[in-house]
Image (cartoon, rainbow, N blue to C red; front, side, top):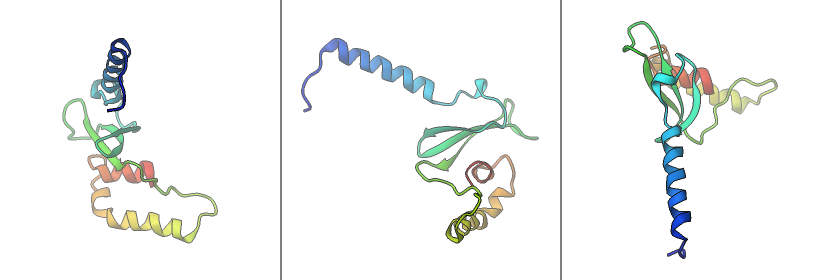
Length: 113
């Protein structure tokens, strides 16, 4: 369809791609507790290993934040529209943010908004 590639080049690409895919997904054991990091996966932009009282042994892996959507953290001299956007998010998700570290909304609020 797009032409042909030499077999050795195609095999090298497949091997490199497989290695990148293995490295790109969060490894819960190697992550630090409550340290969010950017990592796009299944439409989510960030991941965190949440450690809180009552969490499963070794913490809980939480993916949060819509991929491709910028948050609206507070900025000096921000516009009214910027403030309104942040307020709308916080109002819309207030109930889930209040659940604390076990909720994706809590982490999205903390990291992106």
